[in-house]
Length: 192
Image (cartoon, rainbow, N blue to C red; front, side):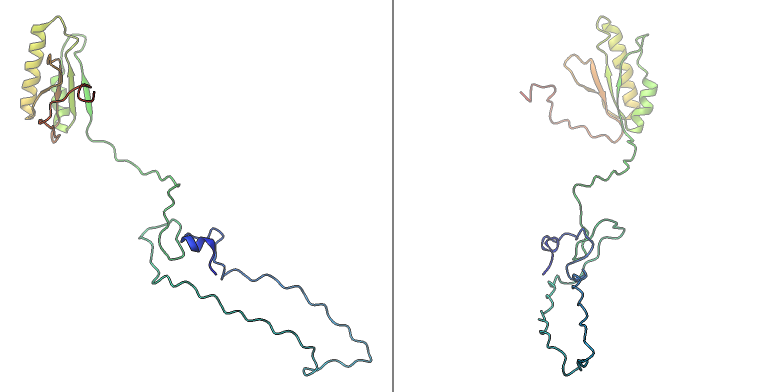
């Protein structure tokens, strides 16, 4: 009879199946002391021992051909030979470093936008969000910054998208970044 672990198809944590474990040790027989008058029993005179009841060996469950675990598998294996995936075990895999980023850009102290550095990053695939809200009282300077950003986007061969109604939050997608232009739902109002 198989173990409980075999019933569920799991590897036995004790290392072997019930068939491979050694049988329990039998109690040692005490030697019979014979007096000098008694003759030693011969083979024909040996006391009759009860015949040991022979139990047939349990038939192992036919599981079909044994399967091999995947190449490079170093985890536990089921009795069938399949790889056992322990879902409770945490495996950390090295993540490759990201090659694209989302960059937030605001005017500096001199109220300038670094468009040459933005052009390099956009060409590498980074998406830039330009915030012109700090230029609230400088409408002509806002227009100059928008023209400069448009010129930079034309050099990178990408489009400039407005994220708000006042055109003060601008998005410049990086090279090979896909922008869905069918839906024009911004903010939380579509969710509410």
